[in-house]
Image (cartoon, rainbow, N blue to C red):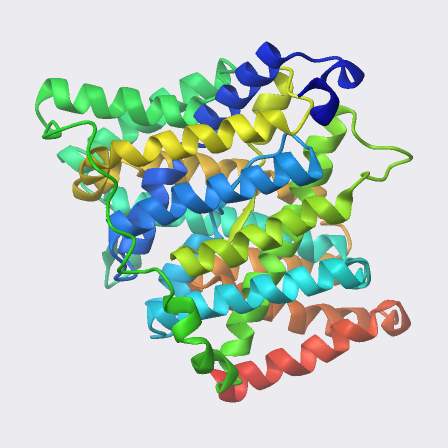
Length: 434
């Protein structure tokens, strides 16, 4: 085992890797319940999604650990699940089975791009400003969903939205959970979001506003409601040009989310060599393979998790850390009775959504706000996502505005030809596709 993973070479040990894996799992375990809750809003069976989430995460972590040998964990991504449920299924009226097919196609394309190394061309074509804006906009979108689900923000016809009744049980629990999670985060707890959910839930049960579960451990729920639906509905994607915008958005968000996460965690762990990540194609291949597996099982796009930094901070240096995370996700399959609590009380998962939104919004710091040719498309990208309740609309508007502002600035030659091609695609999307 030492020889296979390189414990001695990386200055680590079996015990240290196990501790790191447990730390990473606790930092990202919230996704088991949050993902099931979000995709249930799209009409999917929450028990099946719970199982698909755990299995796709375990599969991705195993591939990353055994093949790429990095302490980077994977699971269905936040933001991508929200786009899947609220934009594609509820907003565009696409059946969730067809949306899963879109995830499958994006995963296959991502895998091909990784193998052929076309990804570098695409990454270089899209400016940093738009990449950062997309990440920040998704953060605001997720936070808005959390505020809405908690009842902190409500619909109100004269002003579209307004402040909810903060004295009601739901908003009060969500605010308490947000403060508890913020405390853990500020104090530097590695699994702050997970611990916040646990403490808030237990507190709610103690004071009687949240019902206790009938059981804690049970048999694994059936995967039948979602398994294989992506394959069955592949023709829906292939025969509908409009849905290719959906596929592109899945691909785009996963593409840069993965690249950013890999580089951030690799920098923290000291894995970079001459500012490059060794075995990068394997790491990206693990990500895209996990997306394909997850889509077949029945969940939205699976991607690398920034929470992996918690495990690296605890000493994780090899792929065995990811193997430990995979094992813990498999064990979690037997704790599905806890899922019902979060389905009945969305205010318990709302703090997680809001905090994740805060963390993603940090990308705003990397935007050059003094350069209007960058600031205008970036701002529109960010603000359009929560206000139109659509990640796709935000990305599309930003990709339309960017070439125009650059042309107005006299920098038309600095715009990559791919950006002009996407400009045309999104113009067609706004005129006919929607």
